Every structure is written in structure tokens, then in C-alpha cells.
Image 1 (cartoon, rainbow, N blue to C red):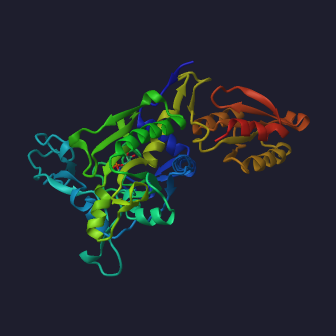
Image 2: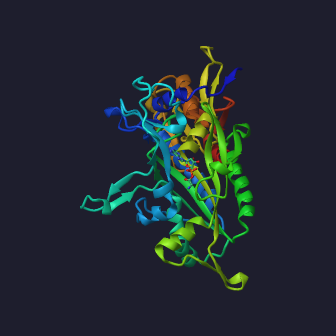
Image 3: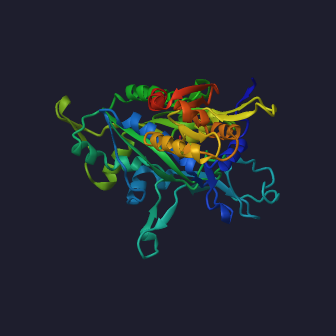
Length: 441
Ligand code: GAP
């Protein structure tokens, strides 16, 4: 049997549209750059990713969850350095007004859009934050930003959480939420978006201990990606050099995935020092120190190790990784199959009556109702059974249960395994146990 991996993001984009994973935002109006809508299967996939992250990060003694607002006091972004430092150097074509990142084009060549040479402006810093106005008066005093990272909601709540939850250092605060960046070159499907979701955790620790926690979190985060079924050889660590570090970090490393367009950052692990809390203390005038009773009541600003992964980018990597084209070119045997780990698969079980007849439909629907109590399931009666299997393979459903005429006699069904395509006859009263054994997460 021949097996091919995903060759291009275009292949995946068309599967995602065809099967209801993702649609271009406001598609009927021609779309809007850097924004995508999750369809019924895509949202299941993304929620499975987020639930897996939430469980692994907050179902533990030393990390708690939070959910903070997208709009924050603009002083937050002054303190964090995003107003002054969160920018890319840009040049504009004077002729057609196209804007480019200076580091992504050759200024000695003609504009890629209009073909004019020597027409570029001097590089100018372009802030990546989206801004809007709050309240009824539209002047600059009401300017407010859409958050470019969720982390700041955690920093400004550090003491609220620490005191109300009676947490001792080291401990972390985790959150999942939307972030917005006015990326100049969004693209590669959902790799670089203007509206996206982050899953971030800030781990507050005693100054001097940060590199130990950094090493532990690095390994923990890699292990999480592997537990979700990603292939080890497609993942690597990529340390940031001194000139690549963000303005808040003294050490940083990415977990990269090998996408069809090349290796790309999927998650960042950053040692953020005491930069953010110190700045918030300075600008707010509020003390953000920790009272360390275990160390002679010393007061200090904690250091922070951050883990930050995009739900969209992570979902993209999981889809790229799961994609297989088997027996390419063989009319009978070719199939596209998404080999998602069952935990991540949008649909866990499909119930397929062999033919569209009421005598099968009624008991099959009863089985569907039972299975749905525990798992996301689909009921599909349209088309030949072979076609229905192929459809479920393409969306990555681990198990298909076929209800046939014999089922009426022997009270048993056929369960087909997505990966091996093997079929087993299982008694109806054992289906629940069968699924429980195979789908434990
Ligand atoms: N709080 C730290 C921070 O935001 P980052 O490296 O800029 O660090 C962290 O972003 C993660 O967020 C990235 O690894 C990526 O998964 C995701 N991310 C960042 N920008 C993104 C974008 N434009 N589109 C989709 N995901 C993005």
C-alpha cells in the first residue's frame, strides 16, 4: 500500500471547505484577509484541542484558569511595551500604495503588485495592534486596543488570583482567548491570522528559579503535542538568538512543526523575567509584589515563564499531521484519511444503517441516540456504504458502526476501524463497553 503525506496547504484547504471544517470569513462578500470561520467539524476539532490543553494545564495543583476581557485599559499596552515596540518596519509602494514588510522584499526589485521600480517609501514602523474607540465620543482620548496577546490579562490579575486562591509560588495562571494582530502578510491558510485564539499560561516563580521551570515547561509542552498524536519527527525546538528575542524575554524557544510550507513556530516558551509585572507596578502605581512567607517574609516581584500556543495554528498542525493519501491513483483503493488521535477527532463514531429503510432506520437511530449521550456522533444514511466509509475516513472518524439486516436477527452490529479498516461484529449490548475501551481520554 502506498501512503503519501500532505503535499500542500491547498489540498488541506479544499478538504476543509468541502467537509465543513473551515470557511473563508464573509465568503459571500469575497472574504476578509486573515480571518476564517470554523464550520461544524472545525469547531469540534478546535474545542477538542482547547479542552485537551485546558485539562493538561489546569487540572493540577499549581495552575489555575482565568478568562479576562479582550478590551483593556490602554495603559496596559503602554506598560507592556506593545504601544511603543510591537511593530514591523514597513515600506509602501508610492505608486499603488501596496505595503510590504521591509525584511520580506528586495527593495531593488519592482513592486510585486504594480511592477514599478524605485518607488518605495523609507521604512516606517507599523504597529500591529488593532485600535477602536470606546464610548460615544470618537476622539483619540477614547482610543482602545484589541489585545494582541492574552497574557496581559493574566499579569494584571496576578495579585487578584494569588490572594483569592491563596496560591504560593511557584504557580501558574492559564487562559484561552481571542487575540488580534494587524498582520501585514496573513496567509498560509490559518497559520497567520489577524483574528486568532491563544492558549497561554504564565508561571510565576521566585527570581533565580526561572530557568529550572523553563526547562520543565519546555519538556511538558512538547509531551502534550505528542500526546495529541503528532509525529515526533515533525516537531523540533528552535531557540531564539539574542537578536530575535521579544522585548520582554531573556530566553525563548519555539516548538516548531514541519508544515508543508516549511518549519514554522507553533508554540513559544518564554522566560519573561519580571518585565511585565515591574512595568505594571510602575505605571499603575499599585504594588504587585509577592510576600514570601517561606523565605523570611521577603517581598519581591516574581519572575515569569510563559507557554503560548495558538489554537488555530495547533489545529492546523494537527490536520497537516493527520492527513494521509493511501493508494494514490488506484480507483478502487484510493482513500484520503485523517488519522487524528481519537481525542482530537471531531466525530468519534458514525452510525450507518446499511440501506435507507425504516426497518433499519428505527433501531439504528436508537443506537445513535445512545452513542450520542457520550460521544460526538454522526448519523449518515445517504449513498452507498463504501462512499459513507470514505467520507468518514476523510473527516477522521475513528469508528463506523453499520446496522444491517442481520442486526435485526442477531442483535449485533459491524464496527469498522478507520486505520486498519478491519471490521468486527459486536453485540449491541457490548457497544457501549467497546467504545469506552477504545475511546478513553
Ligand atoms: N504572549 C506571547 C506571545 O503572544 P507569540 O510568539 O507572539 O507570543 C504565541 O505568539 C503563539 O500564538 C504563536 O506560537 C502562535 O501559535 C500564535 N500566533 C501568534 N501570532 C499568530 C497569528 N498571526 N495567527 C495565528 N496564530 C498566531
